[in-house]
Structures are given as structure tokens and as C-alpha cells.
Image 1 (cartoon, rainbow, N blue to C red):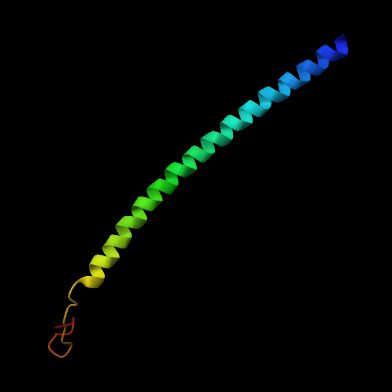
Image 2: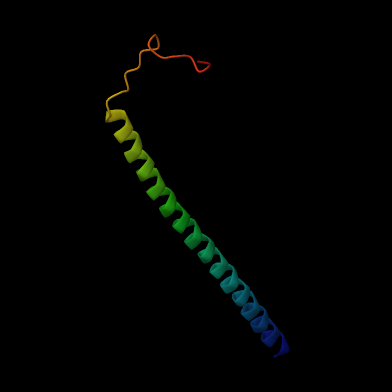
Amino acid sequence: MSTADDRLTSVELLLTHLQHDFEQLSQVVFRQQAELDALRKELALLDTRVVTLSTEVPEVRDPQAEKPPHY
């Protein structure tokens, strides 16, 4: 009976380690998803800004009329 008890103990220990590893992996995936969500929001803001900047009227400058910086 000792070998059956030893095998059961080994299986229980293995299950405990697997549960711990699964919990750690779950936390990593959760943090990665939060980071992905934040990056998606930032990308959307940057995309909106690029679209806004590209639709604005470009600044008209006349280099001949500008004074050089040393004046």
C-alpha cells in the first residue's frame, strides 16, 4: 500500500505545481492583455491625431520674406 500512497502523493504534488504554474501564466496573460488594451488606445489617439494633422490647411511660408535668425 505504501507505493500507492507514494504515487498518490506524487500526483498531488504534481497537480499542486501545475495549479501554481497555471495561475502564474494566467496573471501574465492578464497583464499582457491590459498592456495591449492600453497600446490600442494610444494607437487610436495617434491615428486620430495624424488624420487631423493631415487634413489641416498647410502653413504657407515665404522664405524670401523671412529674416534669418541672426538679424
